[in-house]
Image 1 (cartoon, rainbow, N blue to C red):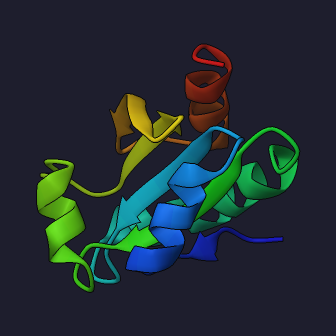
Image 2: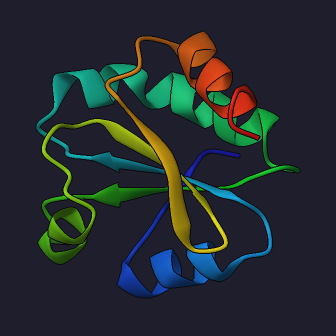
Length: 105
């Protein structure tokens, strides 16, 4: 299963989930976002039992981009109980994403 593309409503539902959530803020014009897509989808499969995982296109939802102070893409944010736990900008690989998650959960 690949990461779910979120809209404003499904993003709110994801944050309300009992599971912690990992959200990638990305853009279709972002080369590194495209390069990271396979790794992020692998993480979505591997961590599906522990995390709710989704993606927000910053071009479609600029209000969320502003709300979470997203300046660079891709930015991955880890949420718990609706609040930001931590974030990482432009992780280099699947292993870097896994390490980011494992160190915080």
